[in-house]
Image (tube, rainbow, N blue to C red; front, side, top):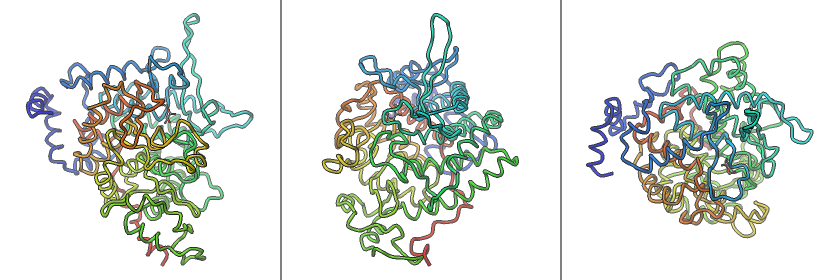
Length: 525
Ligand code: GLC
């Protein structure tokens, strides 16, 4: 943006915005502190404006809003969500004409930031209603708390009726379980509450019950020895076989954010209190486990490289019996001197060293990462920019799998070939997460650089779902155009840069009561 553009925007901006801009330039983090409590709206307001009076000279923003508005899905006249993609040129619709819970999150944030919370409220209530349906796969009944991966509204023009069909995984390719849906639902309920100041929705008995049902599923006692949540492959955004099973970072980070969100919204009645106790205990154990065992930096990598194996008893340093020979070659070059990240997965004799975008950004936003770890994640993104951002933000994971590994791990998936789709592809929807994490860590220049890259291509290319190639240079082989996540992700990124207080909807400060991270060496003494 030229200085002239900036000046003209500031001149035309409502007063409220001018004041915010000043705070943003100061990058004072105390701003976020005041915006972070759920008790009332504490010092910040979601600005209400429409496309027409936003004075944004950027035609890309206008086009993105138009595409997002076109993607709205109505049920009996009310907007209840946005369709995953509306690509008029695509022959195969598959399930891209449905409202996906995870895909709706950036749309919802965009509408909240624009001051149009109605669609978000309708979505939350509609999906809650769907949760209440009995769900079966063949003759197997799913847990009561399960939230759908997606739903579709069927309009009958003759009878003039609308009906909803939902998919809990029973129709999805590979019959994958949408573990992330319930998590996103709770996270979105908090975002709605923070943005509107309307606590009455979260306080409704049906919302409290919906939360408790989701929590019952993920807090159930079982055979587990770890506080992390055990999952099957393909249970989140990466909804195909990609070796993302066991204890994947994406689910653990969302789980952590969900528990913290629920804690701030559960009523202090007897049922609520029971869950709150469980949540606090789990949060403590989970944050310790993640901060100690999932964290990787140069020091940690060196420690693992020198690990002894076959250690028995409480004094073991190499608790999971990770065999140093299993460390992949690429990580030795990839790991910068400064920086670190949460690895993809940790389990018995298993460490998936891949870097995953969503899990690491959510770890920053939820404060699962300590302040030092959050800064280190951003340091790593800066120093490995070519690899992780390249020409289109942002790689879903790094690096890609190829050859024998690809055959074994993906089951020869032709959609997930190296540097494509879920296997190291670049997803514009992730721009909002990178932007939010950059702002939260006080480094908006990282987001600015990423947004510039997206602006050079996204509109021209027709808002593709993903890009292929080592640097994300090619429109994805089977990418849908006009993917709603790509338009909404861009808008959310822009609006957060414009008014960084919006980040408060989706971010949380570090909880002082969570035990400080112990160094690995002190965790076994
Ligand atoms: C693909 C993506 C998934 C997304 C869905 C709808 O299956 O992997 O994350 O929710 O498309 O866009």
